[in-house]
Image 1 (cartoon, rainbow, N blue to C red):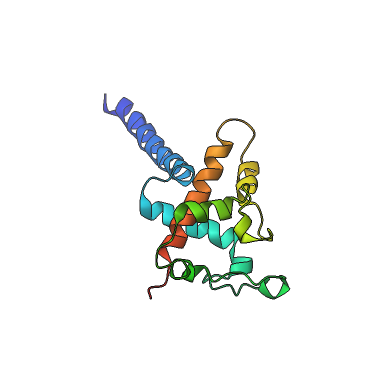
Image 2 (image 1 turned 60 degrees about the vertical axis):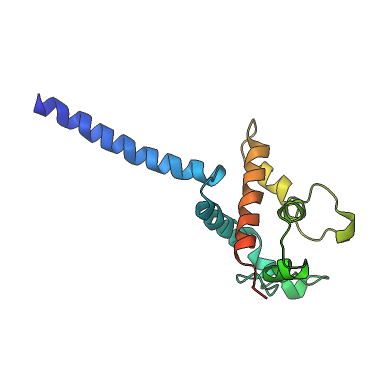
Amino acid sequence: MKSKGFPLVALMIAGLAGAGWASLAWAQDDATDQQARIDWGRSLYLENCAACHGTGAKGNGPLADDLKVPPSNLTTMAARRGGKLNGAEIREIIDGRKAVASHGTRDMPVWGSEFARARKKGEGREAAARNRVHAMVAYLESIQASR
């Protein structure tokens, strides 16, 4: 009986380890834990935004000097908005598919479209794009400078 049980236990452990990797991948598209969402948002930010806004989000990325309009210091968004960051507004800015007239011209990439396109065709593209934008907003909220 023990010799038959060992392979089953080994398979169960391997399966649990695999499930851990699967759940990590799932967490990236559907992060529910706030710290996981912030960490993922930071990763997305560094991959997609730091070239212009800088690794510290102060608007001093390596491409900043090449832009017509300097990138914003993203750590002071809340301060520029009376001390509170409006997540819905920031999501719209990042997503970019809905024109926000008060923001002027659109120099920043339309990340909503980019994130949706990065996903394989089929269901879930919009949800994946939305989750990425939400994660980036969570990260940006977490780095706001205090007054």
